[in-house]
Length: 130
Image: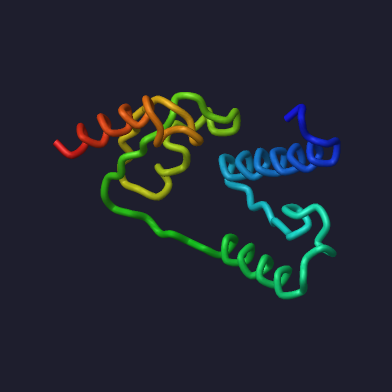
């Protein structure tokens, strides 16, 4: 982070703050209306078809209703989580599935498929399949 330019730092912070508020809104059941300007620093840099495509994707995200799965799911998650996700051990899956089995595994999002962390994931998967 410290190796980034001032503009890159601001961009990253802006995105993290937006993600944080989106997560908070999700936890408390409040709608957040994202616009292309919330994601891209300067929409003028986008071609018109790119901006339109982004608007279509954001609309689809707002309108999508995955429904409820009337069976159990297994969630493999790492031990450390973002502050906004600490209140919900199922990371929102309890809203979508009848039952959520949470399995804690070693590693992070960036290295879960690398040694030695992949061993933790493999062991948990194997235990689930027994």
